[in-house]
Length: 444
Image (cartoon, rainbow, N blue to C red; front, side, top):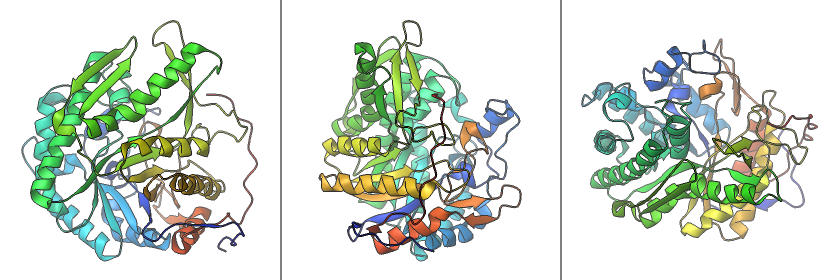
């Protein structure tokens, strides 16, 4: 039964987009790339875990488009898998390009606006050996890949994303060594960041050469940061530095052409990249949680924790449920003077009962932000389907649809009805069922 309307319901404007998000490696299956190599090397939390066939979206894409429509979505975020398209450096797979083109055309024909990401964490197996991000060769490699992809995107009116969560790639892969390529080097982190900014600008040049006008940006993971000890000046200083470096430095570079990052005790960079100035048409925000930062007197100097300060219960993946931070982030990105798209927001909820309330509380923040003058154009829920979640493997469940990972059967969660009611009615209404009681949570 759909949720009942409430007296204080608020309305989303005509033209506001409700959609869903996915990424190629997490859903398609059968991909050989750097993450597949990482898994075989036993680098996940469960060293025996493999993505393998994922949830077989490569073969079930028509079914999944139908599920998105049933959930009330009018946009569908996907990524192109670089390893499918360029399995060997300089050799492009025409069949893969044609397959992606056909899928995107079918998506549009069914009434779903394509939101297309060129790079969603993964790389061809040759990339880190031949053109890693900390070398200038990476920029030309990404340019050439984008040039091959550009014809696939013609006539789609797609929202385009060059890079998904570049700071996660950089901090996880270059500073902590937890993700491919497994490097822990501050100076290489800075060089890689500079080259990713340049790669975005190069990709823009290739896309505009083929497509003309584009609606282009990046999708940036943005955390709300708070001092672990509100009274401690160094905790508070870490919050200021962390919020700028993690949330804003990349976007600032794409707006101003100036990359400025300070990570005390780690590395810093101050470089002008003129070709990056005014190189995006929108700000893409991925938001999930708030993190508390504590200064430590020894390397790595920062302790990073998710805490249940408000007694709501940590989410199943161990993150704080803090929609207020979403509103804060949306207000912060108003400074760029560009339209805003929420390109990911979602909840790991393994019994499915908490998700409608999570969506409601975060959509309320979207409306509040719009009332403050933030030009939020759309909200894409992560994710349409339960899928493979990187280092966490098959444990988390973010999907509007529950997937049986043995049979691959898709079943709607309670959030499907709620999401559809809001999206189709364009009104924010309260979920029809009470929120589950918070369970005691240990600080993480």
